[in-house]
Image (cartoon, rainbow, N blue to C red; front, side, top):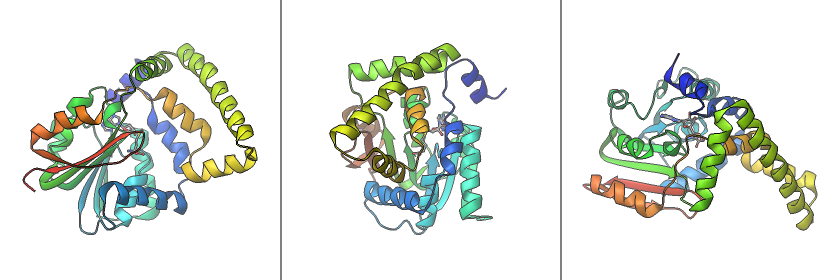
Length: 272
Ligand SMILES: C[S@@+](CC[C@H](N)C(=O)[O-])C[C@H]1O[C@@H](n2cnc3c(N)ncnc32)[C@H](O)[C@@H]1O
């Protein structure tokens, strides 16, 4: 049994890839354009022509696709075999037989795997390193494949104090057993449905219109979006300050952050 499968079986890991499989079918031009725009904003550039990029934890493959479409040579990898399949099928659909996009299975916690990949201009890992079970080790390892002028861009869960501790408990319970899963679903899904209903009513919007808007913005079925959030385990979190204190002494300079709910940060080699 693979490491990934045994972690899932022992209740230590959520199967993100299963969710991505459903999501992949809904990736359309609109969703790709939104993803590309978010990459341009995070990295403050409009072209990635000629850059080599490593996408750690590529999931559906959407952001790897965005980088490739904007001219980069991309290597994507993920720990979950289903995520790897999703990324591969997205590649086969948009860039069949393209030698400038390589999709692999591997873990960011595996240093020898990372060393085998070579060096990159940009290492991008959004929404991944906090799901590895060893976030600080994963952040440190993500620096390994950077070339001498390389940049690191990460998106991590923000530390929300007691709220984060509660979510840790909820997600752990979800993954622990079938009973745990249905207990969490039984509490949260009705809550989300009711909350959505009252938001619709209070904002006096036609629920059908809001449903269509959500689908357009996220491109993701609401059920799978909710399950991805309530089940996403392992789960760790940090603040921007702690992230900077950890990364900067490792020869990196902080460049940029965005004002979203996640801790999003870009670092570059201090020698740059
Ligand atoms: C929430 S998804 C984010 C996917 C993608 N980066 C995005 O922004 O849409 C997290 C992904 O991290 C992957 N992942 C978890 N642990 C990993 C590890 N040790 N090495 C590489 N990928 C990992 C999961 O399999 C999953 O596909």
